[in-house]
Length: 540
Image (cartoon, rainbow, N blue to C red):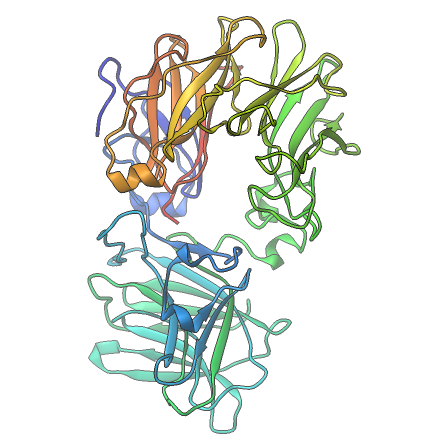
């Protein structure tokens, strides 16, 4: 790890093991909680380079949303599995497909790296939703889940009378025992299974009702979780198990349709006491509303502009326009939408997306977004200006360098510094590798200069090709330096500092913000001057 040579790291206080929100406060250390506390109570703790990976777990949380995206895990044999979209389907039949599984632990970014699970203390939690077959094939194992070489297995099969039953195979004291539990009626044709795993015990809950506990022997030193289906008889009929989701982690399964209602966000529960509403609700025709930004208008209302995928597809390059709404009650409700920037089917970039908004020093609103005009050599960042609080916008113009390389900026990446410099955290693609930099203006957005790209971090070739350091976001620190946070596939987010307002940057290093490769955020809390970071803290 390369640490910044001139100043000590600020204090990191984090509250959540799933979505972490921290304040970089500069003074006063919070006590480091024990792992058991972290799993049972939302106590604050200090994150440092030494303890940043404490209690992180290589879990699984799959909704199988993307069709044919086999990077969700290790599918074996892959030809016996299907990903039609929002389902994982295991098909077991014949000698070559006697069993079909999704196996945990695949990591295509690190050649040879082991992501085997280890479980010696505490608890793990697993959950899955699986479709109940109308008819069970004799001898088939449906909803077949187990830790490889582990002390238990669970599956559904037909008993002697053809009725559905659950079998639980366990090994207390080295002896193999198979228990039978009657399968009650499914909910709308689906079974919801939740497991609480302990080193020598297992609790199973079926369909939010019946719960049974079983003892078993210890887990192997390392293992991988399997879920799928099996047909031991090579001449037997096909066994098909269709999974809607699968979850495994150190914290309990955090959401369900019953917890939130059919229209509620999947990760918010009623007891969280959060305000929930939709500024843009997904429909089959408009499946994605994303990459937006909000700015306060002069009358106190809020202007929201976002990427509106309106043509039945939700890929990054699917048709999208920039839509806008205004809220006059602090975001509780939103008015009717209008189009801020229309989709151009002739655009080489395929759409317009990823909005950043900032108030210029003269009172105008600046809007940057990703797109491409015919005059550009490659896709990049476009800018429009509004003098009437976002109701109308000037013609688009390119502000990223037109050097033949693609350029991009995430949403909500504008910053207006204390010096009145306006800055947009950006990245350049050079031979496919992402290189972060700052795009800045000292004349209220009239002209723009691209600062230097960050130096190369200490990464393997595969990590550089995978993400390098990517999708930067920037915050101004109380001492005037700029902090850039970048995601990576190297175990967490990287930090880099600028002492010249974004013109040059220090060598990026792995920060205590550990977790999966996902976008994050850093910004300044106006009332305190503290730096706020939001990121996905976990390896799921």
